[in-house]
Length: 169
Image (cartoon, rainbow, N blue to C red; front, side, top):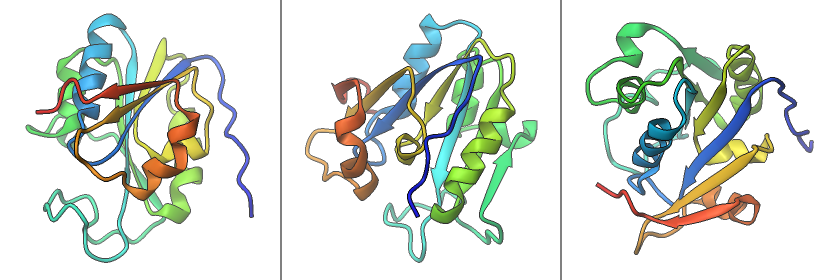
């Protein structure tokens, strides 16, 4: 079944995707927030089936029993060391975190976007989202020497700007 592009209204949307974990997506979002005062952010994590390819224990995939979950709890969003906390510290007006299994990403994205009614603009950090929306502008962060993850290969021809990892940590 072919998915339709999600329709959303009222807010400008910029997506930041990347070639791999650690490419510099979060740092790119932080730089955008320096310029786009009052914008909101949506962090999108697509959960892995089986072992996490990053070999990190980020806790995102642990014991997930639904197709998606939208995290808005302040204690989670503002947890030290999390990308969402970095967005809040840079002045994002509202921050949500969508965690979704691949089969729940489209539905979760629809629901999450509906929670930003009245937002000045939304920056979405996530690569697979471009399969479901047509942002006003899309940035792809390419980390030197990294192999493109499968979701990156799928969307590379749909982005407006490719950055060569200027903010890799």
